[in-house]
Figure 1 (cartoon, helix red, strand yellow):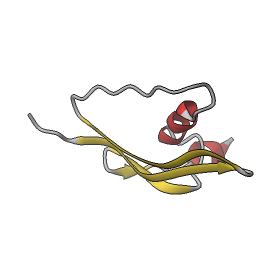
Figure 2: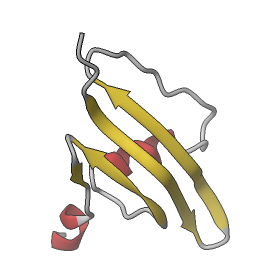
Figure 3: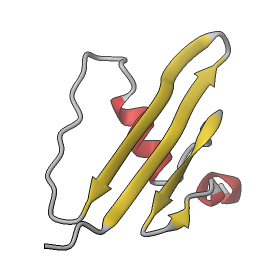
Figure 4: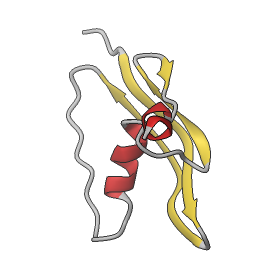
Amino acid sequence: MENKVVINITNLSKKVKDRTLLDNINITFSKSEIHGIVGRDGSGKTMLFKAICGLINATTGEIQVFGQTIKNEFSLKM
């Protein structure tokens, strides 16, 4: 079975003021894999999904979906 990379997250960090919400996240999601993202309230789960969807800018790092780098174009239009 082919393991095509669908989402690749490299060195993703998000800081707001003095608070680190995501700290150096590295994850690869491949086709036909099932993953779960779990954590306590305020641990950054929603922030991670917003970054993947391009709704927020990460402070550092890169997100690629199907090989295309995600940019924060949606929030710039709002």
